[in-house]
Structure formats: C-alpha cells, structure tokens
Amino acid sequence: MTFGQAGLLIGLGLIVAGAALLRRHRPFWYWIGIGAVVAIVRVQLTYRSVMEACDLTERPSRARLWLARAMDREPTRMIPRLRGCRVTRAGLVLRIKMQPGQEVRDFEVAAERLRHAWRAHGVHMRALKPGWLEIRLIAYDLLRRVVMPRGETAELLRVPVSLRSDGLVHMRDFRTAAHELVVGAVGSGKSVYLRRLVKALAPQPVALVGIDCKWGVELAPLARRFSALAYTPEEAALLLDVLVQEMSDRYELIRAAQNLPPDLPLEEITSDIWGLSEDIRPVPIVVIVDEVAELFLTASSADTKRRDHMVTQMIRLAQLGRASGIYLEVCGQRFGSELGNGATTLRAQLTGRVAHRVNDEGSAKMALGDISPMAMTAATTIPADRPGTAVVGGTADGWTVIRTPLTSLNETVAACNEFAHITPDIPALAAFRPDSAPVPVEAPVPVTEPA
Image (tube, rainbow, N blue to C red; front, side, top):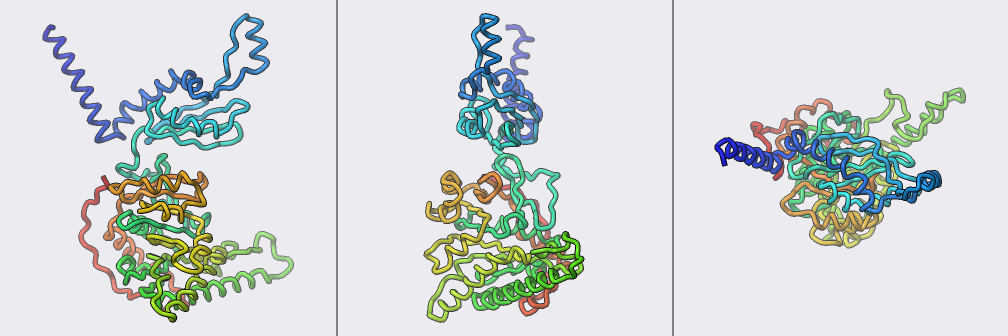
C-alpha cells in the first residue's frame, strides 16, 4: 500500500468516525448535513419495493389489465403514489395519494415495517383529505434533548408547552379543551409542565387562580401574577364558592346581552363570553389545582361535608365554566374513584389528559383508559430518567407522546414578576389576592435540557 492510499484510508476513516460522533451527539446537525440526503435517496430508490413488501398495493384497474393484455405483459399491482417529499428539522414528510380501496388504517398497521424499511426513528401518519395521506418519518429521537422549534406563536389561551414525538409542538388550547387533568408520579415532571404553562400564560390578559394545598410550595413563588391563591382546604372551599358565584354572574351578563332590541344583528347574539363586545367581556380565568387529592382527603365528619361541597363546586365549574370563560387545570399523582364520591364525575368532565410516568397501570387507566389502551401502555413504559415525558390524550390525533423542556422555578418566577402589572383585578376575588410584594429571583444560570 502506498503512502497516498494509506492517507486516503485514514481520511475516510476520520470522516466516518466524525459522522458517527456527530450523529450521536448532535443528531440535528448530522440530519441537516448528511442524513437528509441519504434518507431522500433511500425513499426514492426503495419506494415501490417497500410498498409491495408492506402489502400496501392494490389490484390493477381494468384499464391496466386491458393494456397489459394488449401488450402481452404481466399486469403490475398499483402502489400509492408519492406526490411530495419535504425535509424538516425532524425528518421527512411524505405526501401520499392512496389508491382506491385503501384507507389510513392500512398504513398505520404497516407503520412499524415502514420504520424499519426506511431506517427511521419513528413513523407518524395523519389523513389530509379523502384519498390523501401524510407520513412523517422522524430521523432521530427528538425527545432526548428537547429543543422547541421557532415560529409557533402563542395566542390568547393557546400556548406552546411541549414538543411532540412527531416534531410538532403541543399546544395547550383552552378554547378547544377547556379543562385538563395532569397526573404523574413524584419526580415525573408535573411541576415542570405546570411551570411552563404558567410562564406561557403570564404575558396574556388572563386571570390565574391557584389552589395549592401543599402549603403553597408550588404556586406561592408565582404569587405576583395570580389574582387569587388558596393554600389550605378551608381556603379552597371558600375560593370555589366565590368562583361559582362569579360564574353565575357571568351567565347573568350573557343573558342580559341577549335581551337586546329585536333589530340587533344576528352576529351580536351570543351564548358565551366570547360573543360579547370587548368593553363588557369579563377576563378569562384559568384555575390551577395542584395536588387535587389533598382536597378529597378527610379526617372527620366535618372534613367529609366540606369535601363533598368542594367536589360539587368543582363539578359545576367543569360542567358550566367553559361558556363563562373559566377553565380548570387539575393536577395530581392519582385521580380515581377511591378519592370519594364525585371524583369519577369530575374526571369525566376533564377533556384534556396528560399522563406523566406512573407507578401502576391503574393510574394510567384512570387518565387514559377511555382514550386508548395503547396510550395506557405508553404511559406505564416512560423511563424514570426522562422527566417531563408524558402521554397526551384528547387531542385531534387521539394521543401522542410529548416532553416538556426543562423550565426552572427561577425562569417562571421571573416571568410572573415581569408581567405582574397586567394581573387582572377581579373584585370578587379580592379577598384571595396574594401579597403583591416582589419575589426575589436568583441570578439567572444556564439551564440545560434533560439528558
């Protein structure tokens, strides 16, 4: 071997080793620089053979049979047509036109085979319109180190919270899913999810109301941005009564707005606060209940009576709060019938479901059992070394896996202090308004994403 050949081999070896290191430690840059080109070539060259191997073909049409017979050839089976291939930061997006007789379910069944055939980390599908399908090939593990993509802007009561396993952003949309249940074991990432949500809502003209029966350890540092806070079950009972009365007053306002002259335009007639004019529309309220089980625990007959009353008030808010602009975010380690009367009824009213890592299948069933058995299995298999990972149900796609980027308490406190001046002053909640003294924030430190 000559000196030049040895140098060439060493150079090729260094390139291969560098690419392997880049793929392991900086998968995004590897994908943009090398992986995308390789994946596109692989899909284009193997598309027909993969479709045939995955049994995603259909019998030829009569025209094809006639043409093959006329040319004395063997008719080939029809494959779905690849109409587009787009590169994203997470992988490839294929636009497929299905053949007559095919449905999305056929491709979902073959998803695992497609993933192995095209060497993708994950495969996600969704129907675009009748006859058209979108297949997202995920190039690498997006949830290992969460980086929220830019360009997803927040809207009123619709904020980005987490990153989905398919590369899209999980938006917490209160207008679509008014109430949500968040469950998970200790250390699973519920607090990070809650901080991220509060931080995203802080700049918006929204009233935040908190019930934190863990002596306020979670919500007390964020008090400057909250219109009302309760730290004990006794305070929570009084606060829930005030919220129910506020809801009733808002319904009276809506009724009064409907009692207008006969010549009122139809578009000004409303059945919720969003149809009211801005000058009379009340501010929306997001009620955050941390560790809901503390509200259900009883030690005496007096506690039982108070508990039953609180549960009734929460059920009323869950049933009627959406139209009046009152939304619930209920968090806890476990939420089942063993908590007492009314727990199941309340849970049924919470449309959104977020299940972080749980310790038993029963907890997953409580949150996701009425959504999908596969979602339950996914919640019980979340590894302990991935805090912030959760299964979200009740979305347009049924369910999906998300992970919330690490959000420190300092970051959330800083956001609450920055926007404390826009905290709505609701007269009915004045008695529960926390002390407005600023909360000291430590010097900002670099925050690394969860490993």
